[in-house]
Length: 332
Image (cartoon, rainbow, N blue to C red; front, side):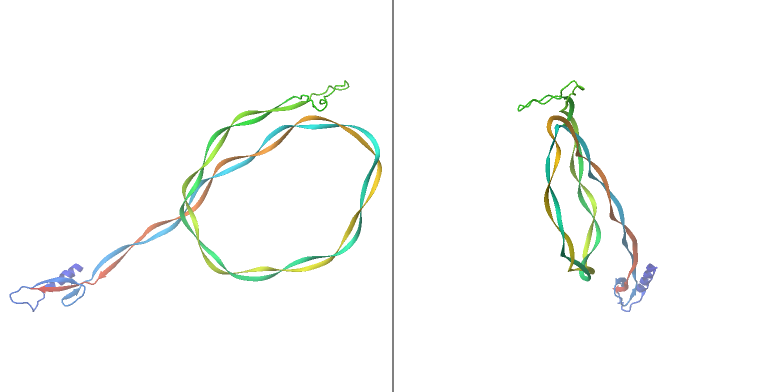
């Protein structure tokens, strides 16, 4: 439609008579586009549709990120360790004797004593105290960091351990260079024959044992971390405090003041006078010795991370028009 109007206007403008035509010359007229109108001009707006992309639409998506974290797991086990110790066994050869036995007897002589006992008694009163404090307001911001984790690599190694193997053997008679030989059991013919004395003889036996040897190897992995961005905000804060007050409180207290008195008391006593007879007897002593057994286990740990997902918004279009004037320009 705009093209038809433009062509019609052009035809009318070119066909219009002009009184300034000179004799012998031929006038030629054209249409010229101008931004400002004038004589022999007509307005013809020029419109065009312009489109621009819409604003992006974003949303926050949370997803878990998991990793294996090595952890040392230990337990305490007990091992039985034994050794042979020699004890001196003493038998007594006793006789009864009568003699005077005296002893000191201590008795207490007491009397009441009254004293004034004082103590500091502490009481508290409540009081309001207000102050301006800086409170932290924080927001969580996510970012990606490189984290070094330790991976455990284990290899088997061999070591020699020694086990204690014990067996019973007949005890040997040991002579002391400073006196008579150690006494033996005597068969006097009035009872059962004397029993043999056995002792425990132990020796160390080697054996190969496999033991895992582990080491940690560092490895860099990306990880989403959340940081707190904080700012200080002043805030009035009041609290109730307890103000201590001390005063002295006294009261009479009665106690017993005692002193010891000693006297001697003697009585006839029949005592047994004994002479010890000693011999060495072996005995096996065992005890449980604790030790730590540790192994590395992997523990799975997961954390939630946030990321932004954005999509392009709808396209926005609008018509823009510019005023344009078409003017007839003639020349000979």
